[in-house]
Image 1 (tube, rainbow, N blue to C red):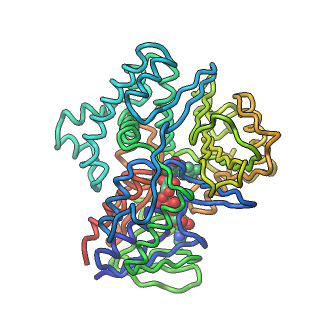
Image 2 (cartoon, protein in one colour):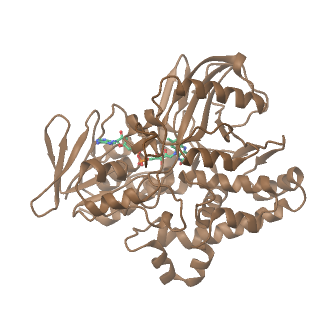
Image 3 (cartoon, rainbow, N blue to C red):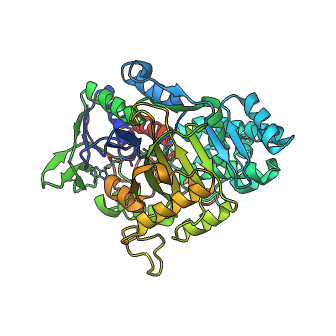
Length: 495
Ligand SMILES: Cc1cc2nc3c(=O)[nH]c(=O)nc-3n(C[C@H](O)[C@H](O)[C@H](O)COP(=O)(O)OP(=O)(O)OC[C@H]3O[C@@H](n4cnc5c(N)ncnc54)[C@H](O)[C@@H]3O)c2cc1C
């Protein structure tokens, strides 16, 4: 039995704690804040409640595996609700499109709304996405990547590498399969699931299309935060300890270099044989542990995008509004130009999540979660070499919130007269609350043909140190961080 300290009670940290405790280790989770969940946050006020991070759950099988492997089925803990449509899209020309969960219904919708042939274009792309997903699932998504995932794929099957198209970009793939520019925007959006620029993201991200369509989009009644609570309960049931308000300042090491514990903000030391870091890899290598190669690795990557969140407490109901809605601008590229140059996007795609759930709003009211992509927080923005935006500038967040309310109004969602109150969550807020550097949601972006395959590995070079969560392999998003926990538990092994 090893003494394991997990730094951070994000979903990845909690899942790793549950798995390692179930494997017989003595596990302590140190969480700097007074809540578990990390980016899977929750905000409530005046009878309104909002998930402040994830609003769409995909690949539920990953969570089912986690629960089954740690003591009992997920469905005994949580009720998952399948969404149909998964999202509704609204384009600048006024066209709307419902992304039905059923493939035939979606293809028919595409033909009807975008014109004959759009459905078969999408089907061909979806087939390609399935091949990429199947090629990547075992050797990439569920395995540690040490010497490069591509090498492992090549070893598995050269045909798989062809499907993944390592040298190719997502944008190029879209152009070759999809004739309708609006449908290409839908595909581009999947790059943003990893905080990346669709013009620079690898074609392999098309696999996300498949993950969403094959396994569906899901909601957890009561809010997705319930998922984090359930994993924490499971970890504690397996005798892991979760210490809140416990900030780790340093991973300590023996003279030989192996980890031997963590130093806490109150000056005390927790001994450990294994340390699992759920903190952003850039924060780990920047502040918590000395490892020059690890630091260089995270510094090489472009940071992923952050998000600007606007929570709207509204009176009344919006007729016909679904659970998830995306409204696209006329010029989607303008958004990526702005965000990756460290500017506000004037006319961004706006994502709305409005659960029809009594836990989220009083009767005859709505709680709107509004999200746009945003440049990471960079307090020194403007200095040479610093890309990002100083989100703490007075008035910036409120000004942008009002601007977004106008953008929404211009796109047919004028809720200004129904507004009871609003709250903003900026990249700076996210950075402070979760320790992610600059508030980047996914650590390093997948900008660049190979970036998705070159994330900081789960096994650090420092003996006894492991990484779990969205900034390490295989990437961000709830299912992937839970997969990373499975990988780490496999690397550590049973007690
Ligand atoms: C606005 C937004 C929308 C999103 N939408 C979706 C979505 O719809 N679907 C989806 O699947 N994913 C979504 N995501 C991504 C998803 O939330 C993340 O990928 C996932 O929650 C990250 O989990 P993690 O394990 O990396 O840990 P994190 O959530 O990053 O948690 C890390 C934890 O470590 C703690 N910590 C940091 N430093 C220290 C320290 N020194 N000492 C102790 N504790 C420390 C932090 O306080 C935090 O609790 C979204 C994220 C955001 C922000």
